Picture (cartoon, rainbow, N blue to C red):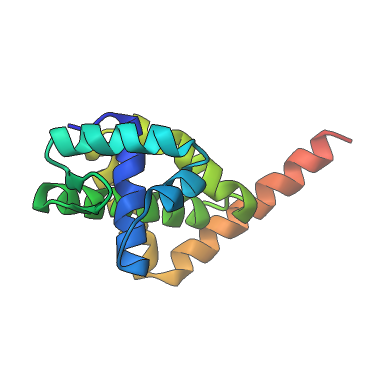
Length: 146
């Protein structure tokens, strides 16, 4: 299994290839806020571990193994974003919260969160009930803090 850092790179490469058709070292460095030399080192490691095929000065492509992991990582990220949105996390906090927790959850936990997201999405009334509960709790907390 890839390390959390490797996962970040694979996910970013997968997203770039999916949206642009290619991924360049400079694009990855910008997206992950790292130096291009760090990207090159990681790309070489990902090549060694068979997640991508890298040719110096020519670029790289994800292997079947890399694509499969990339799809799963993107699914995990989007699922966690959906989950945090459903439970009422402020929109401006969702991305950073997902980045902070996604590498610390087992795939079993991810699957159970997926079940919960599906449960809420099956019936919008459930989401509305949860949001009402959230509003009630905020109101009570505000009154207690006066």
